[in-house]
Image 1 (cartoon, helix red, strand yellow):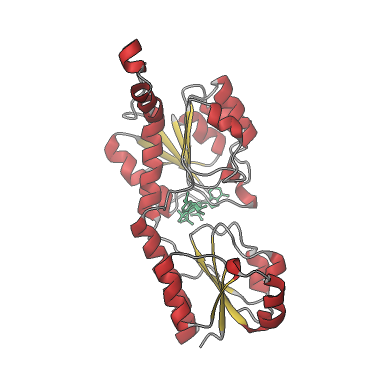
Image 2 (cartoon, rainbow, N blue to C red; image 1 turned 45 degrees about the horizontal axis):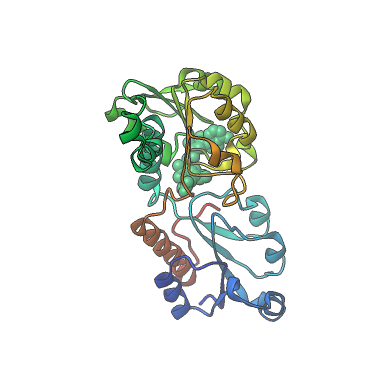
Length: 312
Ligand code: NAP
């Protein structure tokens, strides 16, 4: 049996209860005196439950000398120092696949909302401008447009499979060419130049930090639209905000931001951007499935010393 489990958040109340019933379970986020707890219990903790947002801070990790396993809620792992964890022999699981469809649906939703100016249209109706001024300006169709996907992994492929029946042509950029019919670009700049709509579906972290920079935005051009369901860090945000303000790109649909939830206030003043609060996987059904997989990973480690969905 895992002696003690430390959870850094409530993944979902019913699933947190399941873990509390089975293990010696502690909620770190609810502790008044965290240091006193660590002084007394730090050596007992064998498993940490966390999320792709919180990770495990280095100063906390240093005080858990017997940690064996981290089960994370979410699929991104840019928040973890995998090399340091590997060096300590700590295993990590995430919750892949089960969120792919909802995240891909969100990318498509943001694409339509941006191209068809859903938020501006909603405001046109609510504010009475429709009655006062007549029809809103026309929008742009997605049909026949070129969709460039950065990172053709699980989510990228699910976005592509939704886009093709909607009449979009798909191209992609990534670390490797895949065995697919979509056109491969070995440079992000060339993909951006080809694309009408650029969707980011790659991991965050050092390798992708700011890869969508001024040059990429310039290559996308004034009719171009950018959709980001990856990580805020993938885009040079000041460059994006400048491009949206100057209208040197047409628009953006964003689920993720630098410094979220405290996003750059300049975004709120733009009418050519659709903002979504990092909720791409945020349906009850998917979040329950993710929470169940966190519990299952913990139990698999407890029973067999194995993880179901390990990344290391
Ligand atoms: P995945 O299956 O691992 O796919 C990631 C893809 O990105 C792979 O095709 C990979 O290429 C490619 N890639 C890796 N490094 C790259 C780089 N430096 N430049 C360009 N492409 C690169 O992961 P996934 O499940 O599709 O998830 C992708 C990302 O979506 C996650 O890492 C996370 O950041 C984000 N995400 C966001 C939400 C949200 O709520 N908004 C939810 C879930 C996930 P290879 O195939 O060559 O390895």
